Image 1 (cartoon, rainbow, N blue to C red):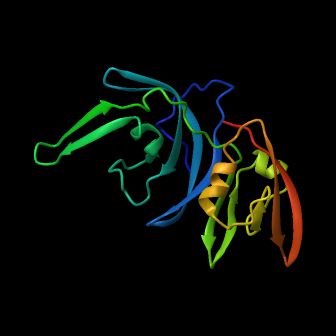
Image 2 (spheres, rainbow, N blue to C red):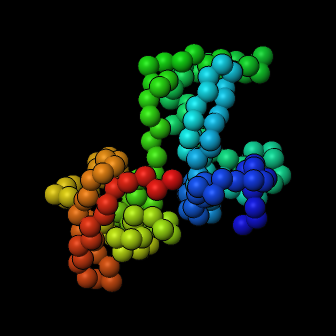
Amino acid sequence: MKDFELLPQKRSKRKKIYRTEAQGLLGKMEMRITTMKELRIGEYSFRNVPALLFDDISNITNYPFAGGIIGNELLRRFNIILNYPAKEIFLAPNQHLRDPFDYSYTGLSFYLLDGKIRITNVIPGSPAEKAGLKPGDVIIAIGNNFSGNIQEYIQMLKNPGTHVRIILMRDHELMIKYLRIKSFL
């Protein structure tokens, strides 16, 4: 993965950029996750906005070097009107304008694959790696929740400052891991 031209050449020593992955219509892509110091949209200014950066090999963003996703965490703060004929976008702030941003609290990605919730990525240096979680592990339960409901599991991993027990299956062996939930960005 080449260096991103979207990032300033001089970066703060405290700025952290982590390798991760995402899956979508084009399959699995290697990305980097970080926070943007400041993002302005019209008269609105946001600080420490989570962002995914990637090499735009499919030219999706019509920028030949790199692309970035700031996504729903930013857009949910506005009511949006798209006027396609006039090529205009109207943004009106809503009740979520000043909500805190939802950061990655574990460094863990998992998906429902073949009827099982499988870990697909663990960001190096993240709480998930420190807990000993690995890609390919199958999540059986988080805390006392054995429901297999992926949305409930995601919500359970968004409480910084807490610890959760994760029961998983690795190579046909049940294991218990303890994960500290904290923002690592």
